[in-house]
Length: 344
Image (cartoon, rainbow, N blue to C red; front, side, top):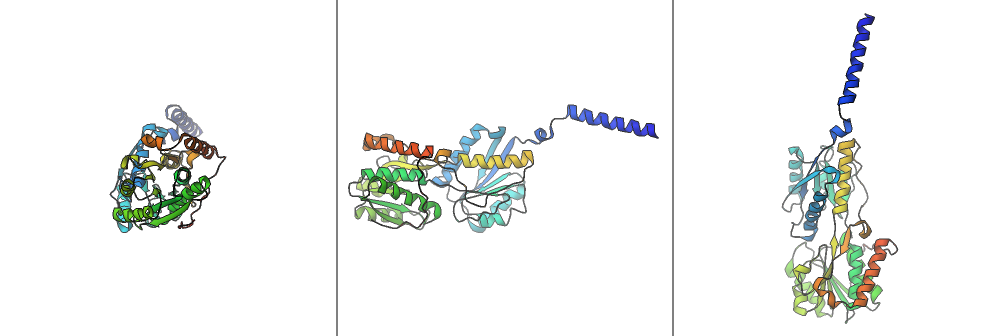
């Protein structure tokens, strides 16, 4: 009996040794080589908010983080129950590792996240609830480049009046409008400001109406967050774009723009998914806002392109110095999310 037991133990030991010798490391065997992302869009890829995300995905894909082949599929713009239904279809298909809902969708995610604990859900921007767990809350602030644009505007303005036309008043809209005017005031304390919101993500007619009204009251540069530069063209004044380099939208008027870069946000999410999938670490989604600054590669100021001559060399040098200080961390642009209003 003892001999039989000894032989069994010896055989088991041999099998274990063989397994250790010939089997790859468990964590290596579990390492995935593909990552599939489902994306719920809120405005469409022609919009700066959504379009810059897809552009960033292309850049990240090319770098192959963790050796992953990253693919994605995105929807037409969806909201409410339609967005929730799309998320469920993606989740139940079993084909997607990350569901990236690119706006205020935490209400929909709340109904799904616990049912699909291996899927990493992403929500983006203001109005969301930080749920933690397998929901990650991406935030995007472009207030730092907005400050730089304001500084330029303050230096260039002849009337000492600047305008800004926004979509909706919200935390991540207010911050950049307030930063724009803070930069303008730093450059020119005499600056007066006019602010209007079209209360829509897309309404060219109202955007034109409000922009024209600001120009009529003396604003000679406009921070345009609604994408309509026709009034600036008609008045032959300069404008600033938002969230993407919009110079091509109006080459004769768009001097520069704030630019959102989602690359570090995507890599942050990919790293969290990788740690869960390949290393068995639990998801630990954030419950507070999380964003990457200019120094972290999360935002930038678009080049002046062929309008560079409109900006005197000494002002360009001042802006470059200010930009370098922001990136170095020696100058901090305050975050002011209060509702911006017209003021002197």
